[in-house]
Length: 215
Image (tube, rainbow, N blue to C red):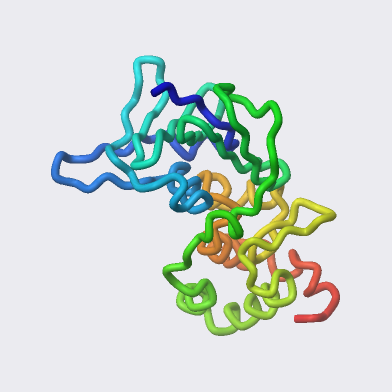
C-alpha cells in the first residue's frame, strides 16, 4: 500500500539521532513520533518495528495501523493510515486532517484531539507537577494552571495560539526544551515539564494570571 506523508511541523532536532534497536528490544516511538502518538492515540497504533533510514534519508517506522515517517529536508513528521492524514500545526496549534494521496493538506478539516482520539492519561499531570517541582513552585504553578486552563490539557485560547495546560504560546513553546525536541504542545506531561522550566528560567510573571494577581 502506498502511504503519503502528512504535515506535522516540528523542530528538526527532534530526530537528529535515529534510535537503534537491538533484535531483542521491543520497538517504541521516540522523539517526534512519540509526540505524534500522544495526539493520535489509537489512530496511530503501536510501533510494529524499529525506525529505518531510507536511501533518500527519510526515517520510516511501521505501526500497527499505518506508517509514520520523518522527512528531514522538509521538517515533517508524518502519519497516514493510507486514506486519512493527520497533522498538528505548530504555528497555531491547530489539529488538521485530510484525505487523499497528497503529502500536503489541500482541504484540511479541523478536529479536536481529545474528543476524537480520547487520549488516556497514565498519570495525573498534577501529580507529576508535585513530584518534579519544589513544594512552593508546585503550589504556585497549580494555581497558574488552574486559572489558565482549569487543568484541561486540550484548552485552546480562541484569540491567540495559547494552548494546553499552561497555555503556552507556540512562540514560547518553541523556546522550551520540550518544544525544541519536538514534543507536542498538547502533551500534558510535556506541558508540566515545560512550565517548570519556564518558571525557573523566566519567572512566574510569564503568565498573565500572575500579572492580574490571581496567583
